[in-house]
Image (cartoon, rainbow, N blue to C red):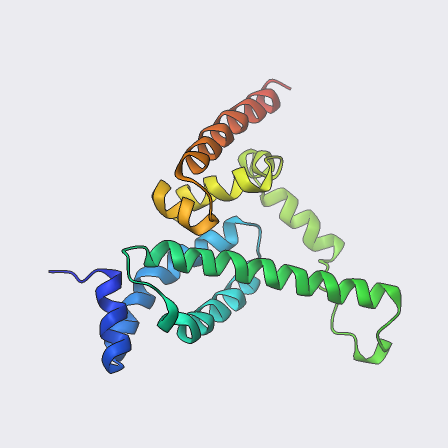
Length: 187
C-alpha cells in the first residue's frame, strides 16, 4: 500500500529515512516545476526557485502539521518562495537603475535581450497571452488546478483563502479566459 505524504513526512522526520524524503521529492518535483514555469518563470529560474523550496522544506518540515495537506503546504511554500525571488530581483534592478550600487558590483541584468523577447513572444500561444490578462489571484488559482493538479481544498490552503473563493476564482478565470480567447480568434 502506498504511503501518504504525511506518512512519509513522519517516517523521514522520526528516523531520518532518506528513502521517505526521496519519495516526497519524486512525487512533487515535476508538478512544482510545472507550476513555477506556468507562472512565467524561465526553466532555469524555476529550477533555482525549486531548489530553494526544497531547502526551505527541509528547514520547516518540523513545523508542518500532518493533516493530509502536505501537497498544498508545499505548493504554498513554492508560491511564496517565487514571490520572494521576484521581490529580490526587482530590488536588484531598482538599486542598479537608481545608481545606488557600485557599477562594478552589479550582476548581469536579469532583463532578457530583445532577441530573447522576440523568441519568447513567438513561442507563446494564444492561451498564454490570455492568461497574462487575468488578475493574479485568478491566474494562480487556475494554474494550481491545471498545472499543479491540486484539489480545490489544496488550492484554498495554498492560497490561504476560503474554499468558496478558490472555486469562484477558478470558475471566473475559465470564463474570462474563454472570452478573451474567443475575441482574439474572431479578430
